[in-house]
Structure formats: C-alpha cells, structure tokens
Length: 112
Length: 115
Image (cartoon, rainbow over all chains, first blue to last red; front, top):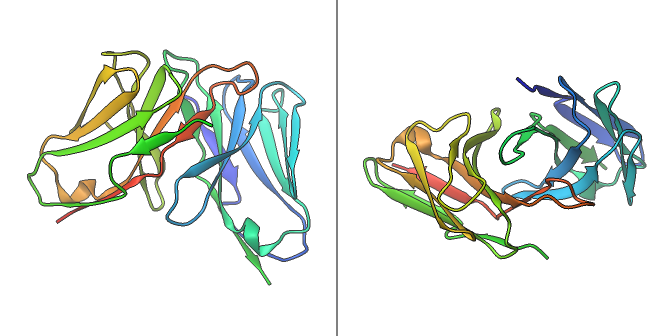
C-alpha cells in the first residue's frame, strides 16, 4: 500500500522567511504532484514533477523530486501572506486509472 | 483550460433521501474520480472510473454508488443519505499527458449537509 507523508502538518511562519515542506512516499514512483487549497475552495494544481531531479518554480515556490530518496520538497522563499493555504502532495499509483494517493496536507499560515 | 463542473456548490438534504451529485468535464478525459474531504482526514477516494460504464471502488465506497453513462459525466449517488455523509465532495478528472502525467483537475466541490 502506497503511503504519502507530509511534514510538517501545520506551519506558521513570518513574512519574508524561507521554509520547506517535505513529502515522503513509500514505494517506487516517478510522478509527483503538488496542489494548493484555499479555505472553502477546491484543489488547484501547482506543479507536476515527472522524473528524478525534476525542479519546477513558480514565483516564491519551488518544488523538486528525488525518486531515489522517495522525497519531494516544496520550498517557500520570502513568504508573503497570499501563500497562506493548505498544500498537498500526491503520488501516482500504478493501476487502472492511475489514481493519486494524497498526503494529509500542510496548512501554511504566513503571519505579517 | 480543462473545466470540471459540479452540479451544486451547496446542498442540504434530509436523512434517508436519495442524493445525486453530478460532475461534468469538458476535456475528453478518460479517468474520473469522486473524493470526500473532511477536516483532519484529508482526501479520501470514494469511487473512480477509467472508462464509460466502468467503475471501481476506492477506499470508502460504503453508502455510495456511481454512474458513468457518458464519458464526460460521472455521478455520485447517496442511496439513503445519513448525517455521517455530511462532507465536502470533490470531483476530479485526468488523462495521461506527456508533460502533465496523470495530473488531476478538480471541480469546485459540493458541500453537502445531511440533517
């Protein structure tokens, strides 16, 4: 059974600071996805990482994938209040519909 | 842009009622999914479908059924709604893409309250 673990689950940080969210998964996979969810809203795709060593960046967020370590990171640079949201990572499961297994989510609060 | 729509944003139903939640996607995606999301429990997969008339159980199918008569539409049915089915329901669709993998696109969600 594929397990996806995120940490931390809750993160409170000051504006302007840097931090990293970690996503570990338990079995071989070379596809990993990051999503953002604002309170009361649905999930929005942020990054798709499709190979070992993949790195994607958008604004103050950068995601990377190390398939050998079964680890993805989401790095936040110089956080701003607008980044406050819940971030989920998800891993591709081999199966009939290639369903995704989601982590529990990291609730990020950026304080002024 | 891929668009996934859900029939209602908010729904209030009584215990014992039969409830239909509908999801439509406009990008010819093969795969469609129904999740429920509850505080502290993350996203839990209820059912999914990889083709018309095909369905497979996810992690928590009890109390639910689904229907996929057309490729673009995937319906979730609560046969006899109960208060423990009060939740946010999210529909998603996906298709293998060279640059996007099996990225899932989510609808806006339906917040269902069963009283």
